[in-house]
Amino acid sequence: MGRCIPRGRAGGAPTDDELTRIWDEAKKHLRGRINDAAFQFWFDRTVPLGLDDGAFVIGVPNDFAREWIERRLAKQVAEALAEVLGDTVEVRVVVDARAAELADKPAPEAGVPEPAEQTPPALPKRRPSRRGPGRPPRVPGDLNPRYVFDRFVTGPNNEYATAVAHSVADAPAGAYNPVFIYADTGLGKTHLTQAIAHAALDQHPDLQVRYVTCERFTDDFINAVTDKGRIEGFKQTYRDNDVLIVDDVQFLAEKQQTQVEFFHTFNALYEAGKQIVITSDRPPRELEELEERLRSRFGQGVVVDIGRPDLETRIAILRKQVKWEGYEIAEPEALEWIAQKVTTNIRELYGALTRVVGFASIHGTEVTLEITREALKDIVPKAYQHPVTIEMVQAEVARQFGMHVNDLRGNRRTQDVAYARHIAMYLSRELTEASLPQIGTRFGGRHHTTVMHGIDKIDRQLKDGHDTQLQDLVALIGARLKTAH
Image 1 (cartoon, one colour):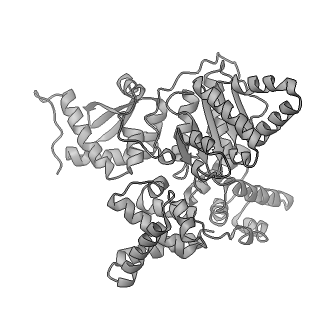
Image 2 (cartoon, one colour; image 1 turned 135 degrees about the vertical axis):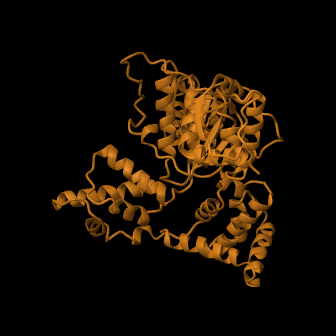
Image 3 (cartoon, helix red, strand yellow; image 1 turned 180 degrees about the horizontal axis):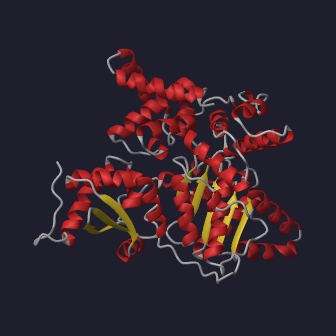
């Protein structure tokens, strides 16, 4: 039940205690609008600063948090405040020293989290760039100058990974270390990790930052071992870094000597308080070809995933690419059509756009919907009719329930999460070729009997016929997954 906006004892602005009570109540309402992970990530380190002229002012630790809340969460905040105050208010978000001090304090312990499901703590303070006027950032030869944050599109599939990446670039070896990012091929791991390197060098030009692929690390090690006089030089090259980023670490499989050296490199950097960022196509616990001690090290920090982008994000990706490349698109519907047809990964999305633009140029015509269909007729839908995967099911179910995929894979057993998890398991069984043990692995390493129980529960409810809402939901999710590609 809402209440009137307080005006303080003498009808003026509310006191600090009143502001705190208002904000605490509003945060309770916010928890019902966003999932727990997002709530903790963005609102645990906020402070109420004032209520004046119909605007409620919230303090946050840094500009990144301010921009994110303003762009993506302001509506939910305003709705929560309206329920408490009994009247609509504007929401103003500002960077405040008190919130920044809270961000510097360690989050209170609430038990030991699952390593692969760990939610990052509050964002650290953003440090100002130390790059002098007119001084360009130092860009190592291994970095692609196009892979920067400005060209990376953030959506529901990668928002946590993006937030962690920004924080690492702002304060290397601060809140998050090590960082492990996993995703299927072509979903932006390399772009995001190289963006970390670019931004870290921009803001901290004195740092030693090294980005390498796992293949490059392996080649350097083999060359150093072949010429024994170079092994110390190899160690210095990799251990004298403030930030080390290694891409596609799954390729360490079956390379025992290289795994041993990587383990020692990892330990040397970690013990020296240096930042480590690693990417893979699977979470640490599924890298069974690697030594257990390596998987344990990878999982001891923050583990985040990047999922497949939804339709809206794919459209945004194409629009940003068009802007950056300076393409002329006569009919915006052409981009929407590409985004609807190409769902596998971002790399193929870019490839389809490039093909359409090239086709139009060769034929001396504008990029229209008709030209787009013609340009891609030989490869759409054939090349993009891929089977539904468990990850696709998880992403769509999470989207429908307004939660993160890690909620489905983690150990939370609240009624809403368990219900969504059972639906996702049921659809994984119905729409994919995966076995029960395989489904269990993708849902946080659950036993196949647990998966069977969840599937049977949903199956019984569907056959019972009384829960029409469940029937409609399962049909909707199934239809979206079958037609999305």
